[in-house]
Length: 209
Image 1 (cartoon, rainbow, N blue to C red):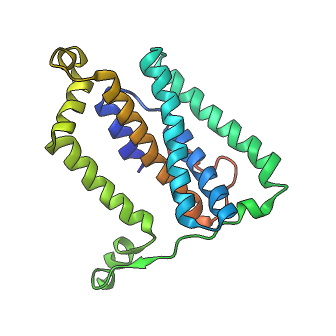
Image 2 (image 1 turned 120 degrees about the vertical axis):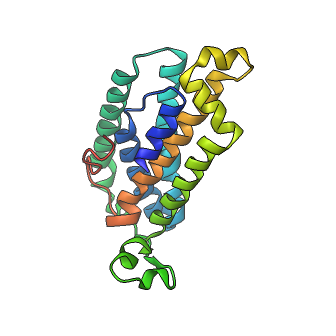
């Protein structure tokens, strides 16, 4: 999911080094919301939105203010790490009930899940694995078989030429970066509500890189 997020951004011409931060913020938001409301799906949605929020900040500074994208991504990663670490110490340590979410149960696909060796690996897992399958198909088909994808690739490869034929370059980049961040946020939610159920400091452990 993190790789798909990077692909969405790269194809539109924005380098996303902040995937690590998006994973971390998504994991934090998912754990807190799922614990507070007792609803795993709300946690998943919150994680996705948190990733999208950080991506929006990335887009604002990278696209509007033309900040160096590599430096910006590293700064956002540090921000996410510091912010989630601070909130963990100030809120979650003293309120453990906000960091005690359940996790999604495994969903086994009939017949496919019974295939020896690969069945339990590929077709007997949490909803996150199936979301990843769907996202791979959607991103692949979207980028390479639709008008939207053609415009995205045009913006990423030659924005001046895309602009001359009426494609809204900045809007296209904004849209892709935020969508990519939301995908990364789902990956972050997996780290908590899809795996261990609780948030811990810097639990993404470099997976975003």
